[in-house]
Amino acid sequence: MTQQQAANEVLACLQAMVKNNTNPVLDVIEPDKPFIENRKYPENKLTFNSSEWRAYYHSHGDPYRFENEHGHFHIFHKFNDTQWTHVAGLSMDNQGQAQKWFTTNRWVTNEHLQPAAAIIQYLDQTCSNDGLLLVERWLMAMLQLYQDDLSELLEARDRALQKLTHDMLLADVLDNHDYYLLSEVEINLQSKLAGILVKDSIADLGQTIS
Amino acid sequence: MSIKNRWIMGSAIGLAAIAVAIDHTRHSLPEAESYQSAIQGEEDSASPCSLDSPCSLDSSPCSLDDSTSPCSL
Image (cartoon, rainbow over the protein chains, first blue to last red):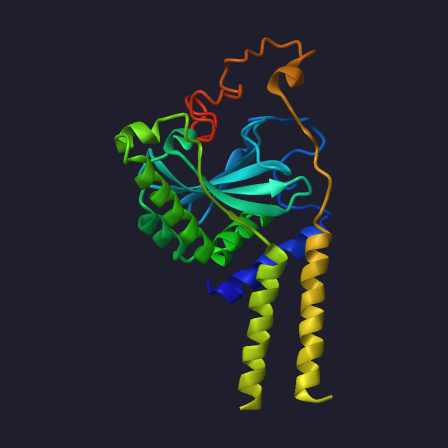
């Protein structure tokens, strides 16, 4: 999926959510029931691309909560039959809008941590939309749309880990509860979509004129 | 209408579509309740240490695996 296709897909998902009077968060929590801190939503998790990817949404209390955050998605990619690699967290604000990508230390997700380069390769995978829930399509498109930012995010995570290993062994750093958040990147979805879709229109105009 | 004007009009409509889609997906969300307050009044024998219970941040709050890591898959 090209970045332009991803932008169109994100926009299409949002427009479908407008029709359904929902958003990515309302789509996974159960609005009629209490929303419980630390509980994972939906119960059966989100699954896409032949179960190679899984995700869920939840929230924490302070101090493990970003400013204006309602909760966040955790997105994982399969490493082997029993282990998963955490690709990124996607923080959602109090109105259900994506506000930040972030990475956490290994102990937080109990993941099989892999270097940035290995995870970035996962983002190149082609995905099929067949049978996906709207929120799964949206998440998949967001991963494609923000591929460059996610690369930077994961590389920043690796640099943060490398810096911490000046004073202790990597294995100790990864399980050290003093280190929780390792990197983060702000999201401005409106500006991202506008930049890509308008740039594409300019390219089309150039081709039409020539 | 010239090509340039059509492009300007098309871009304006595109930008408006993006703004509308984002604005109209803004909804107030329910505030999170703590697990303890949510189970108050429930008459089953729900235990704060059962598999349904949120694990503390002392373990792995964001793993995929419910049994050992509250934030795992």
